[in-house]
Length: 248
Length: 248
DNA sequence: GCAAAAGTGTTCCGGATACACCCATGC
DNA sequence: GCATGGGTGTATCCGGAACACTTTTGC
Image 1: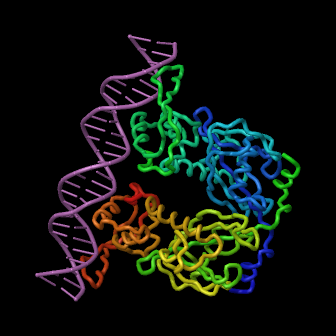
Image 2: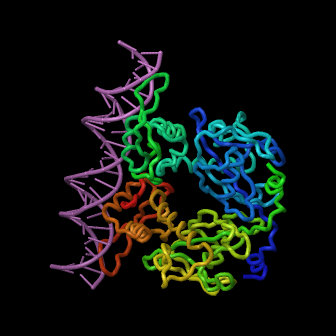
Image 3: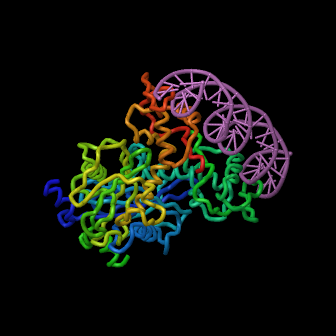
């Protein structure tokens, strides 16, 4: 190795400062549509564009703590207690025009939460239906997204969709207790498919540890129908057999 | 938000410097054992301990480029052309006693490469059989690992093991062309299981796009046996149906 | 011939799918 | 009664597992 390489590799002060941030894609269901929390930027760059909530990692907190703190701040709860996991890290040199920013993106899932609050640098915060964001390609009617957040959102969505198959993640979208058909609607909404109610019920109850039955029954909707049994999340996190997307 | 929060969130210069590094777990097969490249540390902290190869991300390169560059340097090739993917980011405040270091860990896979070279801060570099590292719990005979690299290695190993199931990753361990039984030995070695040769052959050839047949036949080993057909990697990256671990 | 590896055939079983059918409730 | 949703029964199909068996090679 040359001396330049040596210095580059071993003297951290030789580098310009790098900022490490967290960004969170918080998914929830709003009116039977999959939605994600976005904040509208109140400053440059990307003024007025919509962005994933996030912020700097503080010196003495872990990355995961930073993500949890930002989530609590943006959603207005004291402590975020939904599902939270790391997604991937995005750090292309030009992803933020101001400086080198390396962002550790996360995926979060929660049942419908109170209305979000705008942070101090945001002019608004709301849940957007994922369908309306036109993640595949830009659409005139879709809101502009800041930075590389379109890419992050695409990856986050794929993570959620695939993890429904082999983990019990779907229950994170629901308040307990819930019915099997509510759980089925989670799958149908996130995957954009229709599932056979009877087969879904049987498969689910045959997957050990996915849900635990209670004695209680749900109250039917105004359109009638038999009362459904209520269930609690089970102890399993990974599922065997998996709940497979048919068109996979 | 308080003014302190505001400043903490929005003034990057208010932070002590954070170093962003890449670490790479490069897996390969050595004598039908799964092995990973480690370098022995030549400086403090963890002097003499074994660590994943890695280094700082330079100002104008992407994170993935940094990982590819470090890999090429450590393995002594001009350009690393095996499989390389991001694993996860590790950034606990105390994972490096010198300063805050956020490391983006990667997983790499390649067929047996030339002997590795020690980097400028390393006194040695070699492939270690994963079994000999006692990743589950420390063992007297196992070498000490630096930083949180035991955790990273555990996660990397689990990533490789699970990705064998639903992707064509196994071919990355082999030079082309290869036989079906060589591919089966990859699965058996990485999973630590035995697979039925007949069933494996059929399942593999029934998975579209996994491998492409050639006209050539392999030369049998000294113990005899019918000559096996040679195959090339196919176009598929994700597999349907997946090759499932029976004890999953 | 014998051992060993490659490759095929066959049987069995569990889960997925499609769909018929019964149950319980609102209106 | 009728529509609607909850829940069960059942026939069919497909892939995985176990394993017998044939083919081809080295020694």
